[in-house]
Structures are given as C-alpha cells and as structure tokens.
Amino acid sequence: MSTTWATEMKTTSIGEPARLVPTLTGAILGCGGWVLSRSCNDTGKVTILFEFERQACVDIYSVLAAGVELSRGDHIWFTELYQCTFDNRQDCGTEIASIELEIQTSTTKTANASQASLAM
Image (cartoon, rainbow, N blue to C red; front, side, top):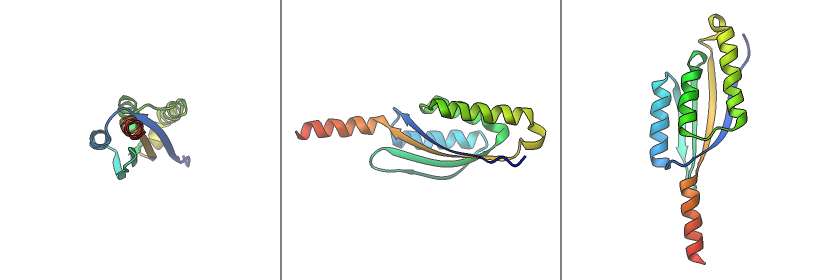
C-alpha cells in the first residue's frame, strides 16, 4: 500500500487550553501515538501534530471525538482510514497516519469578547 494518510483538521473545543493540551497529549500517547509538536497561542488556538499506527485509528478517533468538535469531513476521513485499514490490516496496520490538529478554544473567544465589550 502506498497511500499516505496525513491530514489537517481544524476543530473547536469548549475546553481551556491549559487543560486541553495535556489531556489530549496524554490520551494520544495512551493510544500508542507520538506527539511530534504542540503549541498554544494567546488567542486560544492549540496546535498538535501527531502520528499513530493505522491499527490504532479507532482509539485515536474516540479520543478526539470525546475532546473536540470534529467536522463532517474529519468524521469521513476517520471512517475511510478505518475501513481501508480493516480491509487490509495485514498489509498496512502498522503504517503511520499523521494529523495536524488545530483547535480553536471557545473559552478564550468568549473572554476576549467580554473584555472588548467592557472596553466600550
């Protein structure tokens, strides 16, 4: 198999970045994934780049779906990854999938909007 399973996902979460980053990082590591980089800026945007063996796609999907709001396209990507991996598990189960996850936290947006309205 020579298909590359890499994607960028833009999601949202109501979680606070200070708690979201270590929680998701720990969960990804707990599923056997590798966190390559992670960052958080002062606007509440969290970015996590990680990889995992394709055979762990259901575990990774469960972790992400429980912590962030995935788009329809993100759900479809995971469905296709699972189906392809399941159908060809002997050939590709240990191949690597990669996700660059960008999460906009709503708690920061709400706080910024509140501060802006107070300044008026």
